[in-house]
Amino acid sequence: MNKNKKTNIVYWIENKLYLNITNRCSNCCKFCIKNFREGLTGFKLKLSKDPSITKIIEEIKDVLNKKNWNEIIFCGFGEPTERLDVVLEVTKWIKRYYGKPILFRINTNGQAYLINPGIEVVKEIKKAGIDKVSVSLNASEETTYLKICQPKSDKAYGAVLDFIKKAKEELDVEVTAVAIEEVNLNKIKLLADKLGVKFRKREYVSCIF
Ligand code: SF4
Image (cartoon, rainbow, N blue to C red):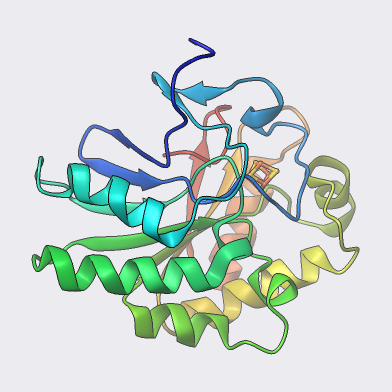
């Protein structure tokens, strides 16, 4: 990775357009890619500070009409709901500016209600136009979650389960788990079945894809 290269707020993988709006996160996962790398697939994703909405929109404008994107995903080297207001505003702006139907997804650690106390997060993101959330769960019980995701709050695991239950009432929901030794994928798949949501295994490359 070229150290002088500009940092990317917007990046893409095939026809999916990703928005890297913050590097802040309420977790400190052992497997988080930002612990090991500056970026992904040629894009530099380590931000020195949170970009302004104006800057984010400027970068989106440069690429939005250059390709037939099939999905826009809030996902980068941090937790998007740390900047919930930005997620809402940018989603609404793209919907107005782009005009064509497109899927909107948030890849999240599922702690949005802890991060944004007092806000009806699921209702707000649904209202803004988000279609789907992909929740990085990684454990079928609390002890393992605390060990591998190292959340700031000891209430995090319960909050993630609560978020999944609320989100599935309004949105398309999948839970994901990263394929590392400490993670029991089968048990998480069973938990996803019990919660009534989809499950997706992620190869060990952080919460991208
Ligand atoms: S992997 Fe995702 S949830 Fe975990 S620390 Fe990194 S950005 Fe946060």
